[in-house]
Each structure stands twice: as C-alpha cells, then as structure tokens.
Image (cartoon, rainbow, N blue to C red):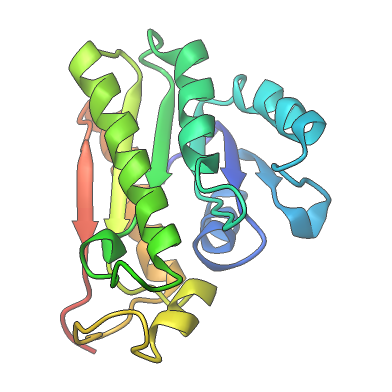
Length: 198
C-alpha cells in the first residue's frame, strides 16, 4: 500500500472518488475537492484555488465529471501537466470510461462519453510530446456510481450491461497501479477494466 504521499482527489464525496479517499487517507495526506464539501470546480476562484493545492500533490486523481462543463477533466489534466510534466515523482490518474464506445450519439449521456474522448485525446497528445511524470488513464466498464444508475435502464446503450463492479473494487485496482508506478517503476499508461463474473 502506498504511503506518505500528498494526494488530491476531485469528486471525492461519492462513488469511485469516495472509495479512493477511504482507502488512501489512512496512510497519506489526502485533499478532496467536491461540490458536496464546498468546492465547485466550475467557479473560477474555487478552481484556481484547488489547482494551487493540486500542483503541490504527489498524486492527483482526476475523477470529477460535470455535465455543465465537459472539458473539466481535460482542463485539470493540462493544468497539472503544465506544472509537473518533468517531475517523475508526480503522478496523475485520469478516470475515463469505456462508455465512449457504446453510448448512442443522440442520447443525453453522449455528453459524458464525449468528455472522456476529449480526455483521452489530451492524454495521447502529451504522451506523443513526451513527459517524465506518471500518467495513467483508467477506463472502467460498469461501476456502481450515479452515472451507472442512469445507464442501467438501457436507455443510453444497445450493448448488454454485464456484471457491475463496486467502487471499492476499482479503487483497489487503481491503488495497485499507484504501487506499480512508485515501487516498481512501471507506468501502466492505459488500463481498461471490466468485471466478467459476479
């Protein structure tokens, strides 16, 4: 288990972010950024304040999605990279989604899926340009979060849903990726995860 790191998590009040907070705060200094706790990243002053703290973190978990600003994760990724691109002790974990492959283009949640495509593109551009910091793009399939509750009605996809992963199960896998980066020197650049059986 990773320890003695300064970690920032966006969207830490529920779902994947909350599971990561619960697992990591025991042995690390963890800072959370969520509207539930008074940090609205859509308000410029609050975003700028959060970025100043995130720049000082060893690990940033770029998790928060907001339907009113689909560039939020991409903006945060670039702001972190602007500061930490040449620091191999820095790591950013971007929570993407496999939904980008399956959402019907005309449906409401295409906005969610397209935000993840934009994030993927930003990460790919930085990879091509080169970087010393760690960058991991995690693309889970179905995780029991608020977004999943909308998808499970099968309104937004023609694909079968399959087994759903609990947030703490995904958090455990993400922590293993952090351990690989810091303790084994392995950067798992892209990580798709799907639960195959109950």
